[in-house]
Image 1 (cartoon, rainbow, N blue to C red):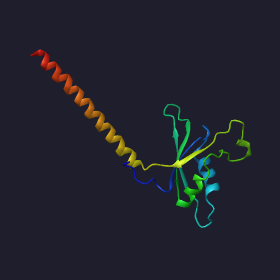
Image 2 (image 1 turned 60 degrees about the vertical axis):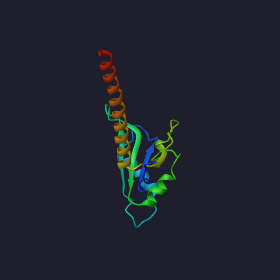
Image 3 (image 1 turned 30 degrees about the vertical axis):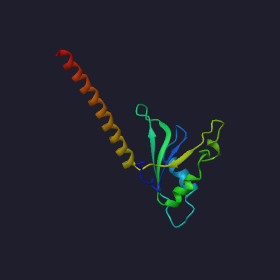
Image 4 (image 1 turned 90 degrees about the vertical axis):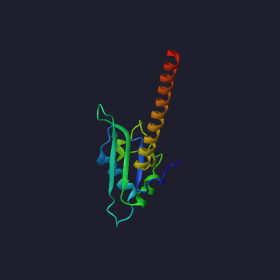
Length: 137
């Protein structure tokens, strides 16, 4: 309700290792999702990090060059993230991959929630104010 169709070239990934770098994520998805030799296989990643430490939360937003690459990335849902055999360990994390919501839509809903909360607060403040004036009369 109220959402437009998600972007065809953007995905959200969680379950990444906490010590991963942008170039590692881009390389991983470029190798597994770009099967067309005509495209450059451009992948842009934005890691989500903790504000205090700057360490990766294990989540990222990825933007692919083509819609086909994004569809190939969605097929990697519930696979493990490993660039090479050395990264495999018994502490394997499994990727969760979904389409990313359009940022404009989520901001719009946030403003609607803020407005509703503001109206509720104004209504309760008005009741308190009216109650105080009735008691003084």
